[in-house]
Length: 200
Image (cartoon, rainbow, N blue to C red; front, side):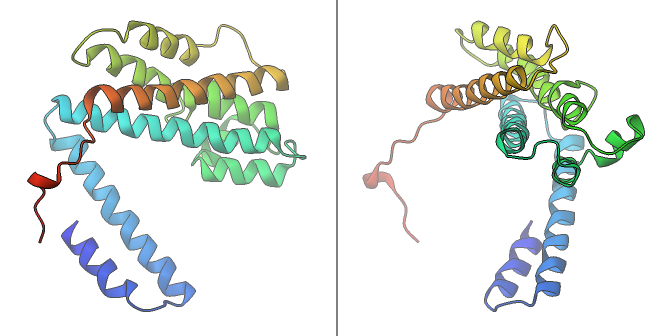
């Protein structure tokens, strides 16, 4: 991380040509993937790790829900080019092509990115992980939230109607935002005390 920060500090002082900026982004991604690998392999599974995992899964589910919602609300949700972009953005292109031989179709893409618990990039996968972690948090009163997470991670029917998919996107996005707010208010303090602040 120190090497990454030093590189970014050196390179951000000047305007970079596009090729150099893309190379810098590639370096940053490689460094962050390495840090993520170290965290998964070596970090003690304590409350700090649990909160970090919750944050990661919340971020991912909101990312998938937001991008899929934009496509669903667009004038051309069946446009193969737009769906290919969504699959690429969700790192699910190879998985989609392994399952479907034809061009990208909205219902199949929505099924893969929203409801498929085997796809580690899907909303259902993230919700299942959240449902596993939330009940293990200290304190009480999160049972209803955990139950809602479990229900949304396992839809009881194949959701193929655009209106039903839109409702699922809305409900899931709102639940994730509410959970984020609940965790923030319950477990993190944001009180700023000038008398105790340290200035450097």
